[in-house]
Image (cartoon, rainbow, N blue to C red; front, side, top):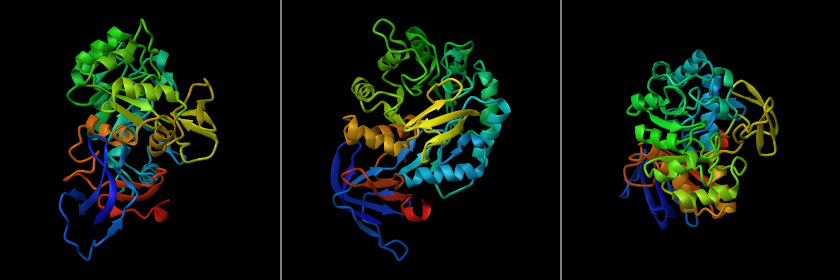
Length: 382
């Protein structure tokens, strides 16, 4: 396959017009032999070519939740994501009982579907969090950080847990980080940690922050907290929910300037209501209500994730928040690939990487999706 004349995203965030050559599943730096199997040539003049997006933190969509622990739910979720240009995903758990979490992990491990986005692994958002910063998580299932329990989950997942969230101020929090830092990406999350505690957590081996600003102490000029500690640690990545509801647009714009576009990771944190109308849904066993673009927990009024997918978030940041398209693509594709340590195969349009490519028009509407070197028939899959 050849994509001709596209404005192609470059690893530095710029765009350059040139042809893209695809051989089988991979991008190549030379013109492939045209075969009867694939002689496709697409004229992409006037279109942006960006790498497929990677959402490393979301819970569901299309009235389905990853925590349904059901292969059919995973299929529906992954197909919806792929049809919206999100070609790789890391769905997140909620704070639930141990056996429920084991079942969720086991279901993901045994899923064999191949009609949607690639499932890169699992983001274990609960249960090792702070009760005071639980947000939309169910406090009755919160556990103190426990490496034995984590390993139980990881065994059920067949090693698929790639990110584990941790409130480092909780009992055994620092020990948890030290013991597991070489096995999984440790992310500070749902935490009441102050600046000094967060600094120590990074020193012990944490390298990531889950939905920066949300479910943690506010960034204060005398008490900088997790936000200030993360800013000083140049090796950590920070997630931002970019739906325009959970963070003010000015906060998103300012955070890109404060952290730079090489460290910010856009996430959707979407719930099962994504792709659905307003109404009543559930999240982690709790009833939630969606009004407009806002989802809240019925019992507490807490914000309950977003109802936007990652492509919608990325485009919103460009259209309304002053984020350059190149920076937004870095945050929605390149940076998550780097954080997961898979940038050798994902996150840019470069020789040897998977041919996961989205063509956007000048208004950032999806025109075509190429997944693993094949043109996606979106009408058939929608």
